[in-house]
Length: 137
Image (cartoon, rainbow, N blue to C red; front, top):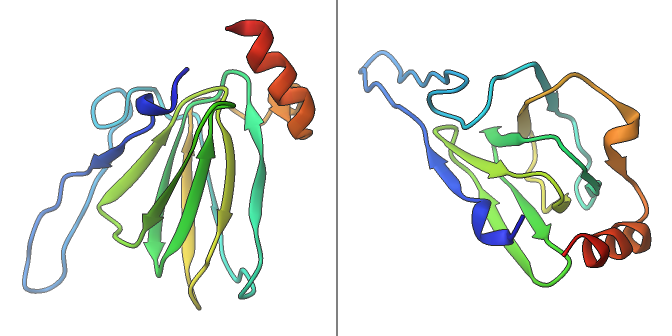
């Protein structure tokens, strides 16, 4: 899939003076059913996460607290997204290499995923990923 398919999704936000509320419904606000949720936290400053791609997994990445950057690479071009609002989610389609960096202190990254964990769905070697991207085009 091309990089242009990875977009920021504006999630519903209900304003309230006591505190705002955002909700996410699989198949409604995100283009997939949610089968797994995980989150990254206590990431030391200067650290990077990610460094892999998925063959079939769809994801929505949200900065629940603080901020961080997501660098997406489709094998042809790269784009950096800065996430810093809990009502914005970055939709990441399959076959997209991703790296997360520039974590602010106390940031929390939540990821909604279209499937349960499956190690065989991962590309962990960039050169293998690039070879398959070229083969699939």
